[in-house]
Length: 481
Ligand SMILES: Nc1ncnc2c1ncn2[C@@H]1O[C@H](COP(=O)(O)OP(=O)(O)O)[C@@H](O)[C@H]1O
Ligand SMILES: [Mg+2]
Image (cartoon, rainbow, N blue to C red; front, side, top):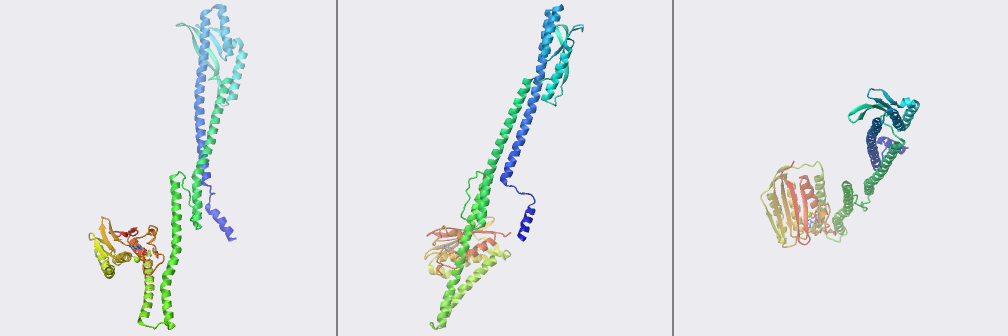
């Protein structure tokens, strides 16, 4: 019941109905194509019509002039009754071509008049033409028009002709056919390009939306904890490729974290089990009377307890360092002095393993938390000495530029394998999977160093060659923001 309500409410929260990207893209392509095709056809149709009408008007005028020149020829060649005969022949043929002719002589006397010759036919013809034009284009406004043309014989004016016609122009059945065919072609081309545009739009929308759908699927898989499946990366679109690449990276990173998390649990168990097992064994032996309760026995128990206490206090320190609100007690720290002091604290170990230790570089002073900086040196030096065999060398090198100070701690020790290098700063991570207590600590030292460096807005990195040695590089800003 409650679930039902939530579902309904959720739908309401969305407000508008959601459409898929593919649908929206296809729709926008189609609408764009429709607008484009419609406007192109409309413009070309309008342009063509106005050109065609102008052409028709010119045609009508040419027809009139041809008739006028025929009349003037007859006027010049004939006289008297044969002239009247000739004028009638020309006038009737003009009438058949839709032109109503009236001929006047130079004194304005009428010589021949088509309306007088056959007025009924003229009326009927104009009416038919008007009806035809109206049926072809209902918006056409046509009416009877007359134009006057002079009758010339050489340079001498011998009369006037008025040519009456249905104007401004008239489409014959052939003309109308031509226009219709053209309109059909235009419409066909428009429809064709519209279909093509929609198909292309759907294709493009598919190309864009399918990698996104893949990415969504992958992200859902990742959310379910399935990191193995990778998205194929060949959409041909820069942004989409970057999206899939970062999802793939995210999945890799999560997978790594998952592996580390599992490993962390077993590592912690191991770190706790070893001293506890030793303690348990010792105490049981004392209780059972197998061992005499001597000072040495108690001291060895005490050692295991110290080991546990050290682990807990290291974890404590790490937790405090990673607390967002933890503050730095800033003062001016002389890095060279801090390095030398840390080196001195390892004097005994250095002598025992006959390892050369040197500090070099200009005196560098930065604003930092002195206690924490000396812990960085101690942890890095303790590792360098621990993982360097007898007779080796450990160097601390300092340098600076305007903004940063850099510290490099290098050794000629065992080195770190390439596959371990990305993880050595993780808590409890040790390259020695057997975690022997003789070869190292609990694996928290570098995690603490990294936390301190990051609190100081610095960076730490390591490069290493197995069998040759390792270099840890710490870069710290000279002033804290
Ligand atoms: N200078 C070094 N040379 C070789 N390996 C190193 C060096 N420093 C650290 N490591 C590797 O990184 C791991 C993590 O170091 P750290 O966090 O200090 O733990 P540990 O308590 O083992 O010293 C070590 O177990 C070791 O395998
Ligand atoms: Mg260490």
